[in-house]
Image 1 (cartoon, one colour):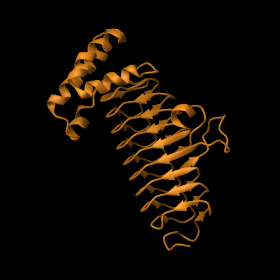
Image 2 (cartoon, rainbow, N blue to C red):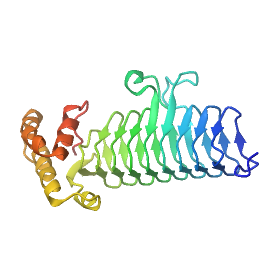
Image 3 (cartoon, rainbow, N blue to C red):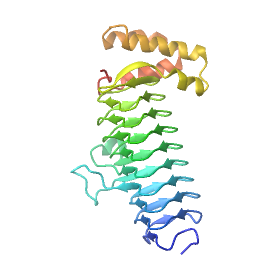
Image 4 (cartoon, rainbow, N blue to C red):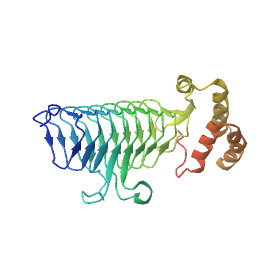
Length: 265
């Protein structure tokens, strides 16, 4: 047993751990789990394969990652999995569950988490979710199945997101927000049901967006949410704005790819 692995930890022989991985007391790591270099697995963690965890991740006590999803159709024999990137922090009592066969053609049965995400206590990420990079999920934020979260999104504590909803890059939800629709990039929502309040201007400033970059985003937000125009008109009027601003183009592309209506209170 490696000096970095506590003697009370249970590691399946079919798990693959880099020699630099640390594993705390009473943690259980199952068959088909692969963990990259310099990752730290705390005490009382349960990791279930097929699961791939990248480099320099930290998983805190009582987290459950890669377990069979709570979808009634899921079985252990299905070729589904969980994939987690690099430099993530997964705090106490977080649950992240593996994919299902329901979106096999597009997601290959994976629940996927990107890089540099902070997932705080008691958060739940259900089957087939896709989470980007540099996100923050505050305590008790919960994602139903098939939810997609873009880069730099912040979820306030106790945020609840209905299945198949999407939040675009740089989106923000206030605490206890309840979403049953999509949130375009850069938009900040609040309430249950959640409604758009403004763009996430403070977050954009902190990430280096200039006033000239923020101004067309604000104009696009007003067109989408304040103009009173039907969505077909909104999309048409966004086209010339998107040609002049890559950020507005991101918003327009999000609307064009929508399968659900926008979140509105």
